[in-house]
Image (tube, rainbow, N blue to C red):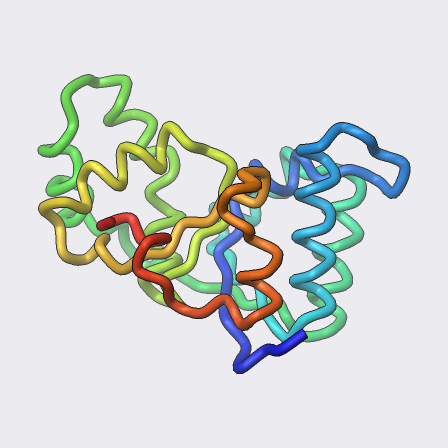
Length: 177
């Protein structure tokens, strides 16, 4: 395993909810658990805003609860404070969307974008609907174009190899591509 440097990863509660125990057999549970274990064992860190932490506390599996405690114990947990909602960026994104349902979905996960922009611009999430909406917006919004979005349950993304190799920037993983 070659890791060039530690990255700060914004990990959505969707991953925490799906991460299964050692005896889990459902593929999504296994992929999420293995991904979180790799983050713990490699030099990467997790970044959370208070809003992300609140979502984790509501939705995390038992495994994810133990994992986050281990991350804190290893000092691999970073609280990222977002003082005020970036209304300008949110408005730009909403202008790219067609329906109120799309705008509501983006608003619900906008804290992931804000945390990513304040750290290493990497989001780990299972939410393909919101990913598509942010990608659509990134076509015209520069701030979003270099945010990496990785889904650990999509095998074609080979997220484990990417993580083990340092979670380095790869243009095809970015919202703007």
